[in-house]
Image 1 (tube, one colour):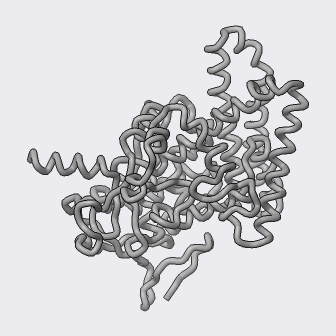
Image 2 (cartoon, one colour; image 1 turned 180 degrees about the horizontal axis):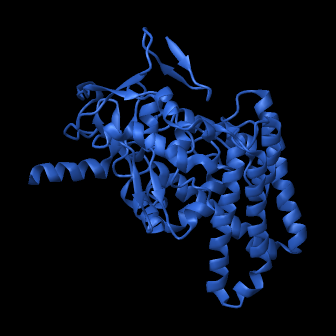
Image 3 (cartoon, one colour; image 1 turned 60 degrees about the horizontal axis):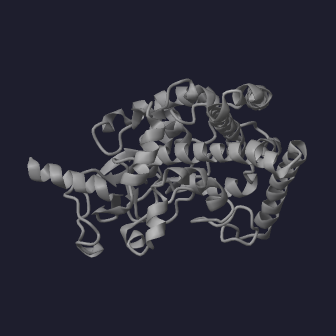
Length: 403
């Protein structure tokens, strides 16, 4: 029997009634085995355990966390626009300190630009207000100045939520396997670890060129399968280009437009790439093939990270409340921390397993982002249907030999 949640996701329910719904997954740690060393047919299967289902998590979260407050949501929207406007007003004071001041200004533009993006992100999930038409309008108001196409990203991002850590169906996060990495040319292998690559991955690489998911600006890219989606792509793309043109008219020259619109946009893009990457990439993370994946198991691999320095509050707790957001994307950002307490309670029995609640304090978030891009290069099979990063498994092997 299949029980459908209000988020549009289905979970497997037992044939008989009862309050406890479960998903069955593997838990035992096996000796790491590289895909290059053994065929998939020879890989062992992990024994199965029972994990809570979506309904079990839902019952642990206070009902008011699912309530949307339009006035409060608009307040956050205005707050972020005001912060960005004040940064433009203060620009001459930053430039007084030369290149250092200009870089500091761009970093702040990236942070507050990403905060505005999170508000638009609420819109596409339907957690901004109870009215989806209002959500879509506000979503474009938030996204278009950031040169981020709202409707196309709504589609790719919802697929990311629906298939988190699925090796084939996850969107927005590129899971690289050994079989793919080994065929890459040297320049492609060298690009990802480069520090400046984070400034280019959102645009143009992902949204414009369409690496991995299809272009978010071209209506006939592989991302879109219906004419209605292609029309939506055109609408969102025109909104983005319209805002970029207004920025050009305001700047008065292509040079000013580049330095005071496009460069801060690239810092926003870097912040978006970094936060998204660190929410899912880690030494302990597992990625699953179809036979081993399910919604609950995929979400348990999501990681909450506390950045500190006021950044988590500024960016509306999408950093340290992301696990709750992944389980229930209809929860507004201002309820994520409270909802997280319920998620932690349900996962408490699994604390010492692969499926426990994952939380890290990362004041070194930028250094960690750079290091992980070097270290976590590609995935290999740990057991049948379960993959982890090559370096993680090699470190486990070394510890086993030294034990």
